[in-house]
Image 1 (cartoon, helix red, strand yellow):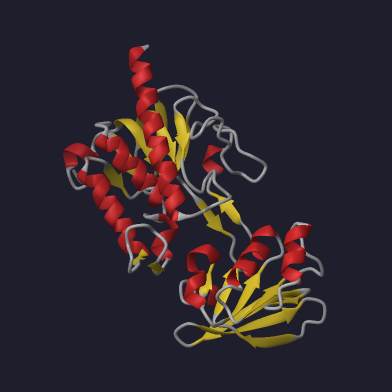
Image 2 (image 1 turned 180 degrees about the horizontal axis):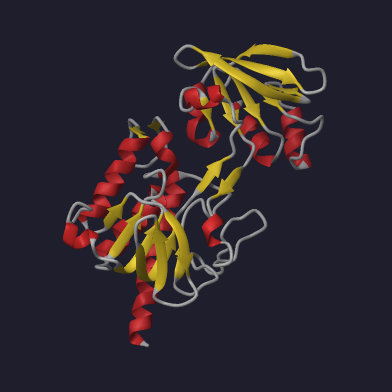
Length: 318
């Protein structure tokens, strides 16, 4: 089945609607459709999620030579469609989880579902520079665990001062020739033990009270301009990579008032993949702010799908 099959596209009632694509959404769809559940995947504004903006993925199991992010996502999508999942490239603008069947509204249609899996992910906070967008995937990265090995022998700049930034900077010293941490303040927000570890690392240098003002290069990042916030003076440092680690924003705005969220906006799970609403499940970065990896998102997608199948079976038995 495909979304070009009008007899399927016109359907508005499903056993399960999956909100969001990416590794979590597509994996959920593979499992639910193989379980013969009528499945709709609403891909969202970026079909395939963050991996669609990633060049080569080296750490996803099963690809010893690596695979391009968009190719991996298209493979997952086709696999879900092969088992009968319907994928529509639309954006959810409203949900109603007050009663079943749940209502999920996009720009064009309102769908009904007996169960929902939320896989809307999280978006990295960005610097807001025009040059940042230009070099995204060409030396600008938002995940050291994902991309660190690509920067062997390079001078690396990390932006941020929290736990994530310091953890990523320390991790990057395994690959980079040097790591400079640029922070807007004169002290770090990271935990004391992480600070101490970074301060003692001879490869790490701190640039305080500063922010990135520009990124330059030919085909990839080559130079980073740094502005002193107090004096306004600018300097340029050589850099083969820039890692932005200033946090993530979970894509949960449409779920406020419908699902329990924590103080950072992430979905709160009460039992594995179950949310605060019975029949609504969640998978991936939209609740997982710790690991944020494609393989863990896929794992959560598998778990959510299995939980949905069992829950729906229990409802029929009742």
